[in-house]
Image 1 (cartoon, rainbow, N blue to C red):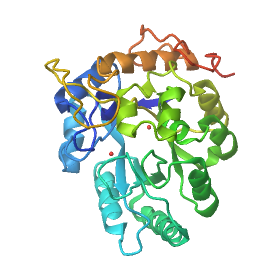
Image 2: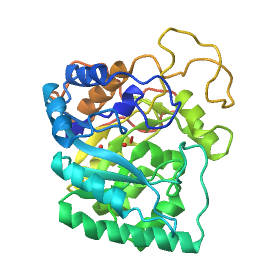
Image 3: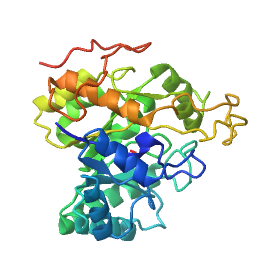
Image 4: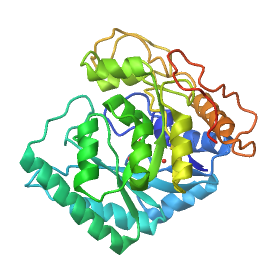
Length: 335
């Protein structure tokens, strides 16, 4: 299992006002301390824009970049996404980054609202996916589409439409899929051949249901603990990893537990994003490094690999409230 980290697990995100943004030196050092040897790039500005400088910086921490999140508008007839995507693919080629992780952006700055596409917008989106795949051959990069809350490819019907009407590979983000209404284990069972990259998350299904019902914004849900360390939520991770293994998947598993970090000084007054739910620090803001350590330990238990990063962790399987899987091992600019 090729396992990588992601800056979003340390709260580093492209959304304005998302939360406290940690310095890259702390994030990369903690990845190294956990034994990780690969990471996704994170948002623009987190790492140096020069592919050479970026590669050199990561190597100082014993890391390499394996993918990067590229949100781009794909559905607007008057907007050509190809220049932005080609620039990303060229930079990834120069920086020896394997996977371009596209998201079908709404064009807005947050993931708290999105439009419903009409037939013409869907036709434009599919046409752009075809053009992007054709151009990807020039750069030798793997390009995937990431179904993502707050984008125009979010729910089960939209994911299936991409599968039916395009040849675009998917980034299987177990958390965003479940939160958007798609069972990621079921998706693996019938479309494993379309999965070219994996973001592993666990999810509190009750909080996800409140997002789908419109009771919580996505940002508020993340603050309220939507994402959990692996094994503490409701994603059937044994079925997903087992199904991908049986299908011959040999790509990356990127550990992502999106978090919003609270103030460093402990000032808990106010709620800066204005979302419902009242004042207070995010529930999951306490210990990003500890959360990733726990997820790594769970993966080692799941796969029977006691030689992976940070051996001796404290993963405890599917022990969180509301967990529905058995926890038994089978026979991834988030993410």
